[in-house]
Amino acid sequence: MNIMAKQVYNDYFFDEPAWNTHDGGYVPLEEPTTPQQKLHVPAVLQPDKETATDMYYTVTAQEGESQLLPGPKTKTWGYNGSLLGKTIIFKRGKKIHITLKNDLHELTTFHWHGLNVPGPYIDGGCHAPVYPGESSDIEFVCNQPAATLWLHAHPCPSTAQQVWHGLATPVVVQDEDEAKLPLPRNYGVDDFPLVLQDRNFHEDNQWDYQADYDPDGVQGKTPMINGTINPYVDVTTQRVRLRVLDGANRREFRLHFSDGLEFAQIASDGGILPEPVYFTKVMMTCAERDEFIVDFGKYHDGDEVALMSDDVALVHFRIHAFAKDDTKLPDHLVDIPELPVTPGSETRHVIMSGMDEEVAIDGKKFNMQRIDARQKVGDVVLWDITNTNDMVGGMIHPFHIHGTQFLVVSRNRHAPYPNERGWKDTVSVNPDEHVQIKVRFEYTGVYMYHCHIIEHEDGGMMAQIESYDPEHPKTYKLMDMDTLMNAFAKENHVDPKDLWLGGMGSYEKMGMKM
Ligand code: C2O
Ligand code: CU
Ligand code: CU
Image 1 (cartoon, rainbow, N blue to C red):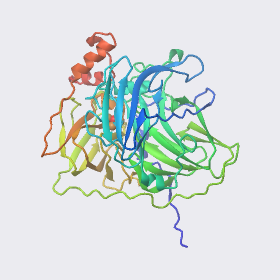
Image 2 (tube, helix red, strand yellow; image 1 turned 90 degrees about the vertical axis):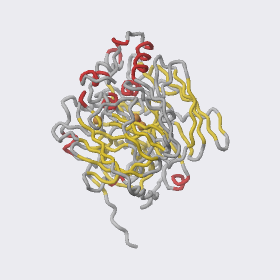
Image 3 (cartoon, rainbow, N blue to C red; image 1 turned 135 degrees about the horizontal axis):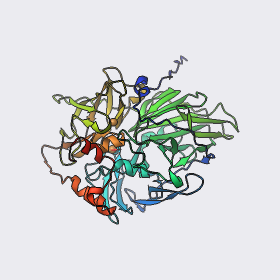
Image 4 (cartoon, helix red, strand yellow; image 1 turned 90 degrees about the horizontal axis):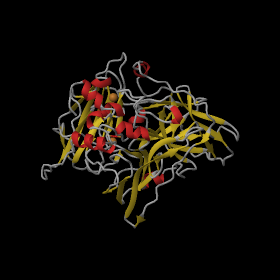
């Protein structure tokens, strides 16, 4: 038998100087000094009702308190719980009905990041507010490959603040192709979601978004994983699957194990990769999801190894006795279609520029009522996305499109990173780089696209595209900023002129109206 040497990458899959030249506001992580706590594994959200073809759920945004540190509890927000939320599992092919309930004191929206659904209302961006005490019903057919997606709040320009309070939760799509692969999938036993975030704790263990505000993205020095500070996981099987989400507002995570353990990536944002990618280090930027298989076969009962970002431990893995499981990952996992570009379609150029309050897309700030681009539904169009920040002090902008999964074609005309050969909905664009992707919308609708440093998005580094069907033209009722701002002011009992929302300053400083 001719066994080809397996390739193991030892670089981070990104442009190293790009993150070494952080802006002045960069906050490094610090290891928590509080005792280790068992990682919180979110429960699975149970359906209200289920038939052979349909699933019914209620998702409630609510406020609560969480014991994060010793001492006073922290005021937090979550979905069907006090912080983050339950894991929502959709089976491919089912019709999904969801009641979206808002028990917060202010408006919110429910955005299904990574789900192929019609925009802009089901998609849940800024055009679909649910006011406090109210609810709204959506339905869609789940028809996309198995993947780890997420749900998060998306009201403009307060997305960053609401996500910071805790409105983010994992969504898992399951399908038959994934079910056939030899992968761990016993949820909570050998298959764990890991939502990576960071927070600062102020007086009485509280979060203070406004005090920590930075137009280039709010950061905290304390890592928080699934809402647990300084977590450990009990490892009871040789192989473990980690569904990792960079759920931070601004932070990149540069992941590796404390002893350099090799691990494999088997899925990216939108599903399983064509083949596993083996490495010792990988970087994730905001909103990206990577699924990893970690083989703990060389450890023994009582050992411990940590998943790190830079020199700070994020999760401690405590090894216990486990049954031997030398299952190898197949060389080939799934087929990814070619997606040929539609003949005659013109390349779409998108320019992300600026930092701080000056961030913009194509020189403009987001306007909720302006449709910036149009693309025919079903067409495959090449998008060329440029980050004009230069290397010195520039930032990586993670570029995201709603309502679709795309394929990465190239980075500065070179091949994409080996772990970018599958479906993605968010791609990091390094300073001074242009990334080409192939984009197709399956449904008509208005969809947002933006930098996923959430404060950049709130600050206007966002635009929207209409996916249209020339045979069936549609018009959309698009929300306007005054309506949302006045509602926020009223709900928070302040005069509209005294209202503070993170992204507002970016418009005001540039002398623009939202
Ligand atoms: Cu995570 Cu506009 O989305
Ligand atoms: Cu999204
Ligand atoms: Cu950005």
